[in-house]
Length: 425
Image (cartoon, rainbow, N blue to C red; front, side):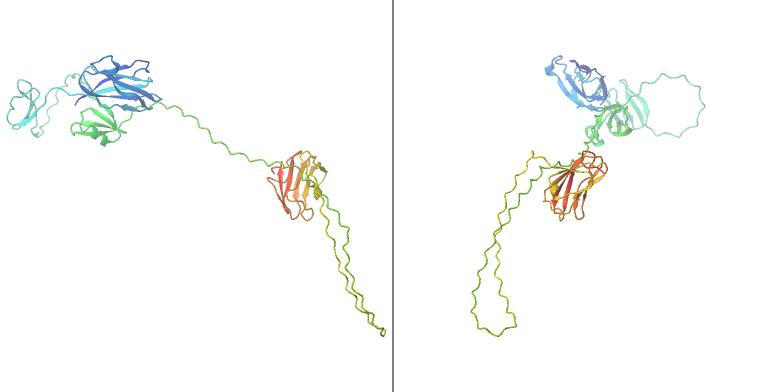
């Protein structure tokens, strides 16, 4: 079955008018290939206007409508029947679409080949007779069979004759037939299933190779890789925002509530002496004996009774945020005492100095009590635990700079925590 191209077009972008791609001049089965030559995807539409109803949109046959064709891709429609006069119209939303319509049709004429020793009866123009007697091949032209070839075995080659004179150059021969690429398939099996037979000059792409129909062997033959022109450079992709950086280190917790109120006064000691026990009865007077040289035993001591303990005095009033904090100014290294609980120790030394936390045996602070420390002078202040005391702090146990402040809070018998504006090293 011969195949021919009906038409090609690369129309401008659609502006309310379709482009005529082809008009069928034979009854045929046609298909349309659309290729995207641009750098962005496009939408393509193909429809057929039947010859019986020209200009009537309600009778248009849409083959594809707004088909998306990706960058560098092509698409072949399904095959559809056309009659003489049917028209194919196309359009795309960009000017980068290329359309091509091809058709397969039945050729006219007759070809009948017979192999026998006698001339066939009732021949028609185009019939071929192979004479089995002399192996001559004749073509019937209407008036008789003209011998055009022979299939007799070739005889031995004779001696070469002399070279004759150079003849004149003959006319240029007709243009050779090319290969028409009709579409593409994912595999050779799919191509063979849809097209068990073909016609010389037909070809299909089975990526990355081109397969053409070999009429002599009646098979699709791999003609090698099919490489088209290099497509345009694709559009630059969107920039990618880098990942969010890690969250910074949380700063130290600020100081807690106000200082602890003073301890209430101890109740007064009792002044009441317990009652004395009763005295025993006096024994009877015995007769006077000889003077004794032995001292008699001492009588038992009466019981001693301690009076009851007096009641505890009332608790002092709770301190509040509007109560002024006591400030203790220290001009050199200083060891805290119990009375410093709740105070602000202001360090004024121009050179480095230390605030020393005493052991619980030396100053029995209550768990939860605290002392505030301020570096008021130029000398860096270091908070140091005395022997037997554990101090928790990060990153160091030194105040960072002038006017830096920090707090120490007792959390166990001999364990304190330092938090505030501390130096990194």
